[in-house]
Length: 234
Image (cartoon, rainbow, N blue to C red; front, top):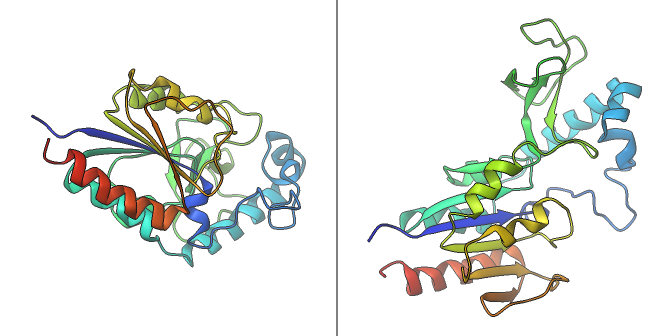
């Protein structure tokens, strides 16, 4: 038999343990900015310089952090399984830990795209994207991020990926941000679903679901060992 396919849905709780700040802080601010001022199309149209500066700071911060034990445990599963990662995170910590098949639902911090032609996407070298940085067609580059109020174009391939899962893992996400929160419902019937989080998500649990009440790092290491023991040789 071939390797089983594990699909992982990861959220902000995975990156948080590496020191990446999330916008769901208690005060509702993201690095002292309202979401509406830095992460919407309206914000971009209103104050492009502020938005560019905000994401430059996010990039600078992301270069200072390292993958943690949860990222590495997910990457190590590739030795035993066909692992596909669907992440709500825009950082590149999964890739840096060694994961080779990562789909970014909400865009990528270290990429920029044309404001005129969304198919023109470029790697950002270093951490700065500036006013006057243009695509090959001459329009300003913007962060390659799905802002609030924008379509999530990667949902279609993510749904297809979830449909291929023999095992589905949800880690570091409270399953409240849609459309990503509904991805587990697209797994084949009776697929084992493991949910790792400090807080039990407010969903209806079914018999194929296992909740692991733990933080991302220790919870994922525990689950990695469990899955290798149970499934790797079957």
